[in-house]
Length: 475
Image 1 (cartoon, rainbow, N blue to C red):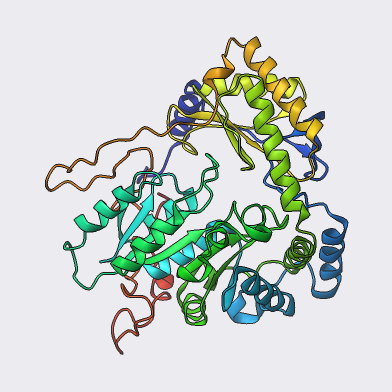
Image 2 (tube, rainbow, N blue to C red):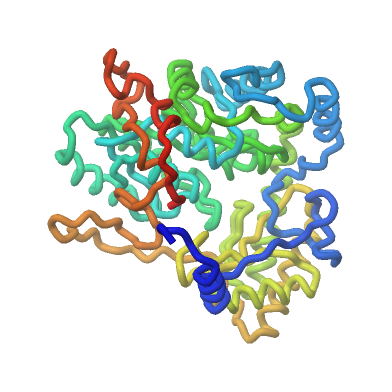
């Protein structure tokens, strides 16, 4: 069928997902994302929301969104470069830039769009992107779509990153640039990247550096300003990616950097240029949430306190969970079906902790991803730990075998000559993935901020591909 999936093939693939324990369905949550919700009609403690500070339903945030809808309308009506830039967008960008300690800021429609746009603007054919193996899928896809060579280094392993950069320093186009991309707080494991070492390495090697602070903004560092601020590195990276849809309780994302970088992204980031501007109510809600975060930073402290209580309570119930104040707590089960059984048993007992399975996490590491919120109470955290322990034991699962994944150090081995291979197969980043969505497009400039020569095929990037008539399949 010309490469398209027929009805029988779709049914077959769905059956395969079911047999593998990887079938997904939507669960219906009634009411706002508070500490307790109605899940498919059943009251449960919500332990898997990214509404970390409990601001999504805060009265001030809701009022700001409602007032914005009446003042500017529900939608922006156009892209930012046409007529979609409104006063509320500009105000939020200015406040976010100041919050991040950078000169300028650019709003995106989502964190996914932000990572696609930033990576695609800063890397292209002839360049090399170095990406942590546990980076978020939006970073993975941004690397794929950039058309750059992608080198995946072992998780949080600076020595392997250094080895990888040295190995690729003399290969390919001598004019090609290098880009390092990492999450700061990793969404599924709740650990923090070694940012100081990565910054030093990027500076020493002349590589650009992008850090995604999606799960750190509002939750980590001084005043909730993120992991870079915790290390005093806000001004040491080329671009900081953040989200409005987690701790700030709204929707959308942003990228902060110096004025030149933001002007460059405004002119070259396809996911910014060709997307409708974020809706004014969401921006006004995020602006109000940011104000609450700065005026009342005790919410960050309360989140940390709840995270400590949850971790201690889990440990006292026998789970292999270390103490700390990180709000993301993975309980790695391993088997996909056992993970789903534990999730369902916990729901029936009144705790909703969503099961996370491949491809979100590597095969064999399926887990319940627990997320504390500032709006929880200490009693909530202790009850959740007790409930999860009872659910695990009922299913014959030993809590001592469930907890934070332990890294397994591996020696750096020289790959077989002539074969480009990622260090781990768990992250599906390919050097040149077949049938990538933008295969038909013109190559983008390899060196960011360098002007294209007049008359060259790159002079009109990133617009060239818009008139191509071929249809490409999703990767």
